[in-house]
Image 1: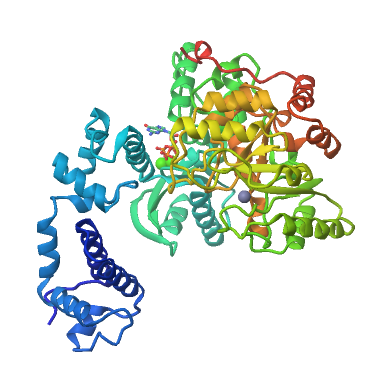
Image 2: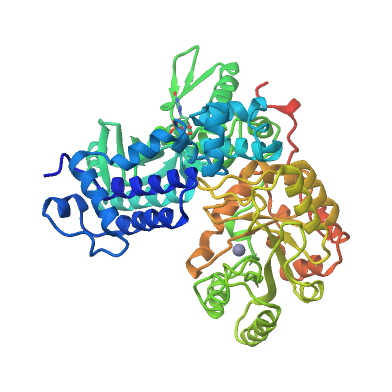
Length: 609
Ligand code: DGT
Ligand code: CA
Ligand code: CA
Ligand code: ZN
């Protein structure tokens, strides 16, 4: 009988770890692979192994599980441990297995760190990387040690419990749809908090609602099928945890006073603190129910945020700007930006078809973009590069142009010939110059060698920008929210080079990327760099995702003229057909003729300081 329950995952992990430990010891590659294969097989089994053992089933019939492995499974399930595993572990430095969790540390290095430095924890490695001990190890050096340090820090900031906005938004929308279905009398139901401010990651979802029977609505939320746990279920507030582990706070208010509530729970906390200071100086105090005259004690209520801000003598500050930075001062001085909106976009300049790694035919993508009312688009399938994304050879690229010419006759949208060209590890382009020169739009992106050191990566990207045919740098940092850290590069140097070479920078709207991030886009706008908002769609359903990129641009205080693809087609064509770096003037002219309402942020102009 099984000593206790042992899951397939636990069994698979044991073999995975056994394989790694044998690798540390330099054991035979054959044995190591056998354990790794067994781990894979076990992870994918559809029945519980411990039960099979208890039932006396023969395991050796399962592919990848021979006699030796079958015996170990038996041993683990019946005794709770495996002798071989314990012995191998005892022969290795303590904690060596933990160190393998750090990207950049393989089995050999883990052993070296354990034996030479006596380190058994990730924190210990971090310390050793900082004080130089790690770099002094044989075959290590400063570069490798720095890279390990970077990985440790990045994985720490990544493995936070915040949810990327793309996921949080769909979870929130599903919950809101569920509430509307159950309560037909809801008059307002809207996100507040970081979700309404379009932060890139969300701690918890805040919702604000008006309905005649608030308690009823709270109960509806608590009863949604996706709810895993109910934390609070009160008359004004209900908090739940929904799958896969995100908190939703729902608050209800009255129609005549919802303005203050929405404002209060939209935050940010920093914005609210500054606004409260500002109001205090006028003899007023703020809370979620209204604005109180401190002297008379009289409370005024507001049906919307506009009237709330107006009572303080301020225009409505868009939620994306409520970061507690310079927005209050700009509002006081009447120079809030007229932020770019989704409707301003006239083209999408980064999208893929099934010619590379997209999943739809070119025509589906063209038809969808055309149906969205856009004036132009660039098809930018991958270059041949690493081969993983089924990148195009120059021959296939030429054949694709022929297809585009035919489609052009049937669709009322200008189809530009483009490519997303790999920036090779040394900064060279993945297509010959004469191929690139033929294209209307070249998006150049880093897709490999992402752990290059700062200097190398900076040089690499700048070299790409110096190429006369490169129109736009795609997803500059290559980060994937919650999954992959950004590359290391000198932001100021890269931005300066973008400006000097007349190269545009992409705000990649894919909710997994949001790259440029808001603060980088903010700086890019300040420096006068043309920005592009593209979806990087790999499926026609992604094409509507531009809103995420627009949100980043709005958080960067961008007005329409700061975004290249808000230009009408003829204007945009003038930009791409003017040689670099002179084309920056085409952009500058547009910015100069727009109303100058966007302030440049300086520390000295910090609001509330
Ligand atoms: P999150 O959830 O970490 O992504 O960020 P927020 O801004 O959504 O923060 P949350 O959910 O704690 O609170 C929502 C808003 O409520 C926040 O932006 C400002 C407002 N608020 C009002 N009073 C407080 C308070 O005492 N503490 C905090 N943290 N927020 C408050
Ligand atoms: Ca929140
Ligand atoms: Ca909250
Ligand atoms: Zn792409």
